[in-house]
Length: 260
Length: 288
Image (cartoon, rainbow over all chains, first blue to last red; front, side, top):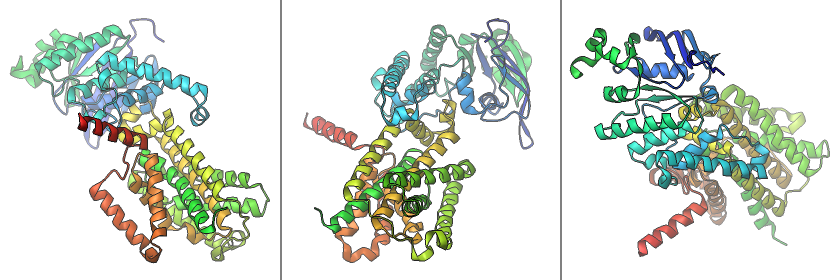
């Protein structure tokens, strides 16, 4: 919709979310430009995941406005967020655990498929054609994340790193414009997170997507993101390039501390 | 051609298979528990019976009317209750089932009350029942292996992730609920045209429980398991006629044993072909 690269793909204006008396996010502003890889940093409980949940309609914002691709999506429902092109992964991986790896991706592909109930119940040619097509696409996404040989395995039985990649493959299968990654490097050692950095870079290069990611590992953020926002207790501490943010005194005091 | 004892067994099995397949889609694949599906059977049975007797509709049209009526009621009920959390939804279904039974008991002019509704033509022969059961199985199988059934499974596995992947959770839950009610109504209509005389007590709470128990026993997430479960639950009491009073006791013990020993049921998350594949695979790796 927006060809002008000066308009942000995602914009949040004064967004507020309260739980009882607690302000989980307080007057939050954010501008993510098309094709950015944007970082969201902050200690535990800073409200990062709440921001994701507000964007994807799991929570409704109490105040403020969220604009995606020129449309107001403040009051969107979760499945509608997926339809307009916002996909996400979860901090505590949420796969369809008892289903096969391939089925996890097929279910995500289904959103962009079209055959009717009658096509399905009577197995009409359209059903056969579309499902074959979907299966091929699903295998394509699995190939991209390197899980082709695990396609028939049960998703819940995969090792942790593979589950993370499957979740990303599933998110990509909804053909998003914006991909939200919630701590993709959580629980990974240095080598694994380096591997993840390369993977996300390739993902970004090969697909026309914008990425907004929550991450604790500063090395991952500095390798991937140009711009980032640092949060603490629901408030924005700093916003800017990673290098600028690292030098910000408030950030150093609140979060990065002796780490850098 | 076939004696009435065996015909009775075949028809009862087939009718219950249809109702349990509906239950299986709802409980086994969408993880929604309903203790009110006997209510939908009752709606199907009485609607089909009245269509046959009062309006002289042909048999197959009467059955369709029964199934559609159950589906419409499920849609309306689902619009009110499907957003409720699991246990509250379950209780609302239980209440609904009992309401239907009591309503049919009191609407004496229309349903014949406790005495029952009589004069229904005998149309459900064992052949009709068998054809219907096979058709029901194919329909359920095709549904489960389409994007609709895959959406049900996704909701069962993780509602939040399902929604994040574009699945309208409320819409698909309602679809699953209506589907199970249509199958229950279909089963009820067939049963009415076999018994020729129906009373509300046929569709009481123990009947609803029996449907749930059969589904759990046969295995959640397995259509072939549901068929197997129905055969076990319907046939075992026939072979142990002397102990038929202890039917509910036996169900209870069976469910406790299944939950303790095999929580996913006889065929949990596995269809019959998968089972064969698994066994042959095990044999070949064991032999090597």
